[in-house]
Structures are given as C-alpha cells and as structure tokens.
Length: 287
Image (tube, rainbow, N blue to C red; front, side, top):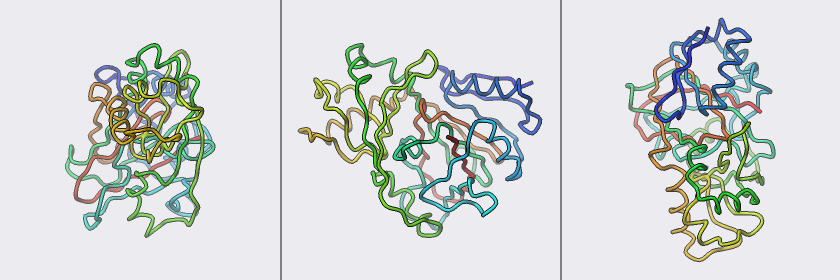
C-alpha cells in the first residue's frame, strides 16, 4: 500500500512504496494525488527501462519527444536528459516551462528517473503550482482569462537550453506552433496552463490587457513576445512571470539516484536549476 505525504502548502507530495509491486488500488491513489498536488516523487526506485515503460503506460499513451531521438529503437519513448561537465550555457530545461506545449496535443504527464546525479541539493528541479497561481488572481482577471487562448512556439527562449543535446541527438524539424486555452479545469480545480518558455501571443485580444499583464504571466522559458504588440512588452512579461513563479507557489525537489518524479503539466511549471557537473535523467512524456 502506498503512503502519500504532502509537501508544504500541498505543492507536490512524496509517495512511499515500490512501483514494481503497484496494484490497481495503488495506482488510483497516485493518480488521484497527482490531481490534488500536481507532482509526486518516489525514492529508491531501481528500474530497468522495461520497468519504467511498463509503469508509465498506466497513465496513458506514451509520447515521442519531437526534438531529440529516444534512448534506443526499443525504448524510443525514453528521452535522455543529460548535463555534461563540459557543456557550455544553461542546462536542459533551465527556465520555467510546460513540456511540449507547442504541439497540437501536449503531454499531460511527465516522468523523470534519475540515473546519475551530483551531490544532493546541487541540481534540483523546481516546481511552481499553477493551482495556487490561479487562486491568487483577482476575480476579474480570472473571468477574462477563461475566454483567452495562448499561442506557443518551439522556438521560444527556452529552446537555447536544448542546444548541446540537439547537436548530438537532435532531429531536424521545423518550428512547431500551437494554440491552447490558458485556464484549464482539473476536476473541480482551475489551473493556469501557460508555458512562459513558449508563449508568443494571445487569442483573442485581451480586454484591459494592461491591467491583466501586470498581474499574470504564462510560460517564462518560451515567451518571445505578444500578439498584438503591446507597449513596454518586456516590462510586462517580467511582471507576468513574477506572478506565475512566486516563491510561495514553489517547491524545490532534491534529487537522489534512482528517484522518480511524476507531474501534471497542466498544473505545474518546472525548471532545472543551474549547476556545473554531470547528470543523467531518463524522461517519459504521456499524452
């Protein structure tokens, strides 16, 4: 039987149990906890690639990552997210974002399994609850955002963080674009679903946009501009970003070897923290 221990302010939770022995009842517990807390992590999960794939399939259809080749032909849905000591520039995913929101059907869940990690606390993944971010918006802003969609691109600012790995294992693809609702409802809870790393505009044009832009921000790692164009857009983007990733919405996950994290991309932003050294993570995204 799995035990769930919520983090402070219910931003994520730890699950205690062995996923190799997971029952249908245990899976329901984890799935329900994801809807409530947005992210679940489990320590001491020594999994083969087959074990990992098997567990991931409980959550839905596995997605192919469009920008990088998979681990192997057999395990093409596993993406190697790696940082090398010789890498220059930022780490893979080193800006707050939502995974692959620039696709027509973005992944609902993401999993990371740690294979090689530096000293604990040196290469964390930070999460920001978009349940809380939504709750802290004014009623008038919430009502307007319910009518708005965000426009996203794979070529937003966060794309620079994949540069090293794309050189080694990349796929030649054209820019990917999508449009999605900014506010989503997960059961009875609303969340901000907007990737700062990829946002390039809004549709339709927002009423009272100056007021809104001062209070709300979508995906920082991918935001490259607004459409239609607004005055002082750089200043506005910074203000919006500040709201979505306020410290009171965040939890910093410290990695250990053989640790597994699962999160709901609709309710959690995430980013890698800067560090120098070697780290290898195996990632699966799920539709």
